Image 1 (cartoon, helix red, strand yellow):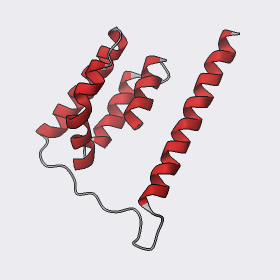
Image 2 (image 1 turned 180 degrees about the vertical axis):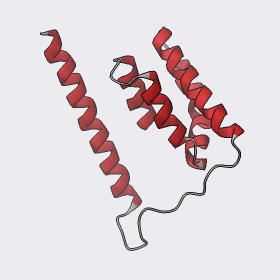
Image 3 (image 1 turned 135 degrees about the vertical axis):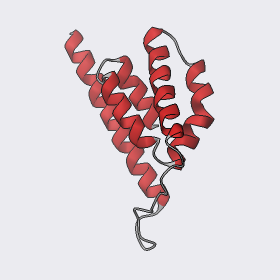
Length: 114
């Protein structure tokens, strides 16, 4: 979900290449971030519709390979205590925030066109 949102922001020129690199460098420090890209890179490549989409994929790949060359990923620690929020609730919250952000961005774009 995060990558799809970043792709949209990059396509709409709301996120610069340097901002995208910074976000992805942080994401690829973790094992989960690396595995996610390894698993989904083909899907993202298949969805390329234009030059900007291809550039997005290239930037992500470059940051991925930089991270892999640094060695083993950092070990993730749980941010939630065993008695804390459930994983489903946390994921639902992230999805809701992403959806609201996308809606605000699309609404802003439409308002700018009118």
